[in-house]
Length: 379
Image (cartoon, rainbow, N blue to C red; front, side, top):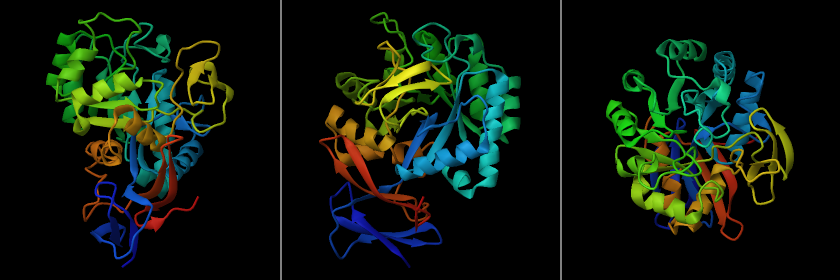
């Protein structure tokens, strides 16, 4: 049986993973040293696009999703959720159909994108909490519309981000959870009472906590404290050093704990491209600077995230003063709890793995090899 060798990020000791039929068969100490780290493949719960490929383009097509999947794998992400944002129902349905068709036509996509994340359109319409989502398409939750989403997607919608300020949202959340759909709180100015009721109904995540909120908020009556305080919520965080300054990132992580925290890229199509000015379907003209900050052209307002998850893992270490093992857990094991329990090196798990080194000076992860079901990936 083939074995894949690397250094354990937890212990620092060399190990080898034995693969059989695409699954991890065993994990044991390696007989020789290796200076490359070995980890489960990264898992990204929020991907709008990358390297020019956009899930939310005006005319969605399966080829875009296939190309995006290949780019994600090249960055060490072996599992990701294509994320469809606030838009007209027609556009959302078109994007869902494109993703479903891509999974039908490509086994790589079927394996890498197990389900779909819809971020919106049931969010706060106010400037600030709404972020870059188009105001004209914000609307209350509607179970009939959700059913039409699922019909278009072939039942693949597995995560929904919404604001719990809508009247009657608790029954909507409860029904989605009954169907096995994860519900995340995000892009909201909801009260503490509304947030607690949503959690009681089954909401189990916070989407990019600390973002999708007003630029100026009341010191006590705001949407952050109840989400930080409730241990039933796992927080997703963008660790690009632009969406959250280091102090905020570290404080959120201390409140939630590593085990209830997940790193996401929230990458948009401009992610991975050279610095410059771009025209985008969401946000219009944007500027990506040399430090990876993506802003609406001529302003300081963020227009999305552009950093690959692999580099967010490294920046999280620096921002919060945590170990590589802890940071990796937030990009493998922790998100894996929401995707069929993957993201570990347990026997029986898919042998989706990444070998890499870390350049802490530049804040980047250098991917050496990616393995899908134990087979070395070659783009």
